[in-house]
Length: 119
Image 1 (tube, rainbow, N blue to C red):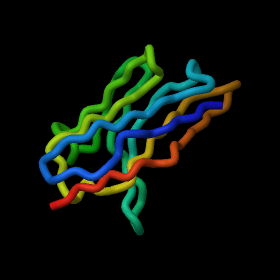
Image 2 (spheres, rainbow, N blue to C red; image 1 turned 30 degrees about the vertical axis):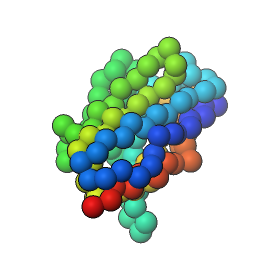
Image 3 (tube, rainbow, N blue to C red; image 1 turned 135 degrees about the vertical axis):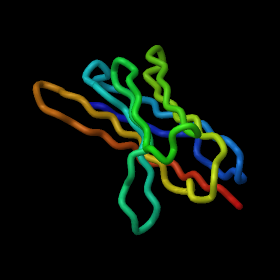
Image 4 (cartoon, rainbow, N blue to C red; image 1 turned 135 degrees about the horizontal axis):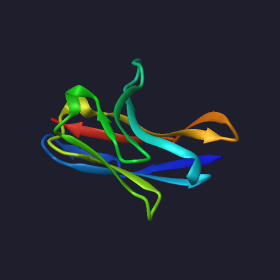
């Protein structure tokens, strides 16, 4: 199994920056991709950014240029650098890890971290 734990959320003013971290543990070798998603109450969870095992990245079109996903394999950690934050970026941010264990696909979610951008 794979477990992921997010950290780094908080309150920031419009135009500020935050860096979220997602630490993975367990069967790390089985992870093919990790990503960040976000969700506001009453709405679906949306993809923010994904990074694959070979560091290929994919971003939500509207966030490209302000958000950057990266990874540190020595720490089994994925980061989300968020710059020029806007009130509409306020959401719970979730980390997700996906891969294959014993021939079966899995997906693991973290508990989420709140990001609040004040106007």
